[in-house]
Length: 255
Image (cartoon, rainbow, N blue to C red):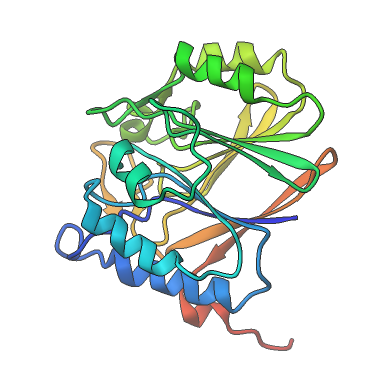
């Protein structure tokens, strides 16, 4: 099955920081996605909008309405849980306070874990997240775990300071759940691949601005945006492609 992962859209009614056209960036990504074979699921792994405002979610809804494939949303630290639930009531939200989702897809299951700490940029895996995972995790299906905040360092000090806390708690939980095959994350605005608790662990780029790969304070760049395409054979392997979303990158030439 094919899962397309978009992340960190940061949709805003005006250019972010005065120069980042997040709406235009999403439109470019969607143009390329819609010109490709349709996925089984479009996964958007957090920071859907810039400030958690209803007007921003309305912009997202306009772009998702009528898509010929299902969409699953997960909040990030720039999102507002109440507004997200209200604006997207058709999502398979679990009971409050978290905006988690359990999605059965073919022979597999996706567990979308809300790691948001309101008012903070960093995330957390606390008792409430572990309790939900205990209830939601199936024994009969292979699982992909989806979090906005990665529970591992990515080598960018500013991002590592605001990653997901509680990583030891999550690693202990994973030690008793062999069916979890990989972790898919956002937050970093870069494609990073590593391992966590022996599983493949990935972060998705943003279709808009990327976080600069440098020491010192956090900074962003206007490097090409993109998304990830996961071809998943549950119980066998996860194969991931990075896809740049710019239109000029989608042209194909014979060798």
